[in-house]
Length: 223
Image (tube, rainbow, N blue to C red):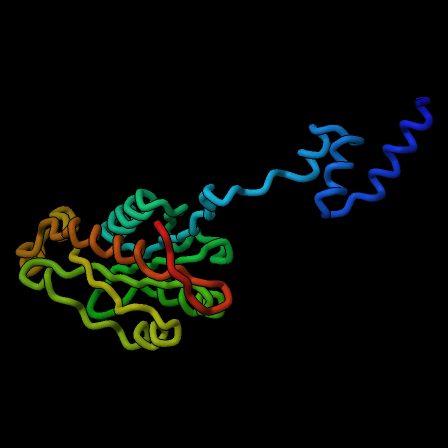
């Protein structure tokens, strides 16, 4: 067979590239095994597990003295250990929530109110947050009240209902002596009240929750 005839057969085989087994075998013969495998990657065998893409999580926070930031970092650490892809950023450093499946947001709470930048974030990104799984926490209680849930501010409670979030989680805070000089009332509360076991348990709840769907529903997560 001449080289011209071989080239003609090859061109005919390329034009007949269809999905039937017989046609596939013809393509293999005329295009070569390597080229065929490049154009038609091997299908997964029945016993081969599907490698699901890890969910992406944003952990973001508004902090005043650093305690909320450290809690956010701990949550991020736990979720990475559970197999998620996680970014931890202060609220002012978050360009968008679009890349994320799950958003965890925390704020320090002072005199019964969240820091304003945290509330603004929820309002600004409200439309996109409605199609994601959103978890909220606040930190701040000290001393004898460190184990008591703090009431959720009315504006945050309203947004949480709109986003259908789980209950807002309260974490105890951390008050350093150098920020309460000459304040007798606050000096009695100085100390680190953060409960890292509590942080770990709540993070595990997030990790085991149903996986969000961008379409608005949920399906079971497997981690």
